[in-house]
Length: 233
Image (cartoon, rainbow, N blue to C red; front, side, top):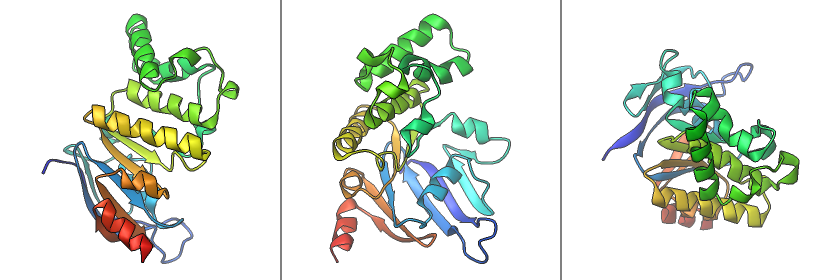
């Protein structure tokens, strides 16, 4: 088994939370190229775990290893180059004046030359079926279309890992269906590891592995069918 992420004894406590731990001695491994869904009720620690892996939160105890790199203040940017995150609110992720500008934003920061950048932008917009919307402004797009643009922006940087932090929860059923299927296509066609923070059973059922969190602890881990049986009990 070739693990791309190993988390050992991760503990995180928010300020002013007393003795309550958002993550309580969490350990897990995620295989390279797999799709893992992390599920649990609100406040169970799902998003805290995802953001800790990406180095967005400074945890109290534990070790996070991403593709052989131990997460620390010195390595956080190296790890973020390997991870693309797509968040819950599509409006909060749009930073460009147009779709094309938004997808190009990260590439510009990397100093990619203009001709190459345009080719990459056109390619990823085609992958997410948004190539005809290049000149659209954010207020001319639906929530699902904005999430497609966010996915295109992530793909442009060629990450090894994509983390979806409840990325479909604010979409209508049709938008949710389209984004889940798009991610499934990307996962099937590329050697990209997907981590999905979700409440959506249909999304979890597409994954290879499901981790259930409750009160900051892993209470179940296994195949999606095992999770579905637990939901029915």
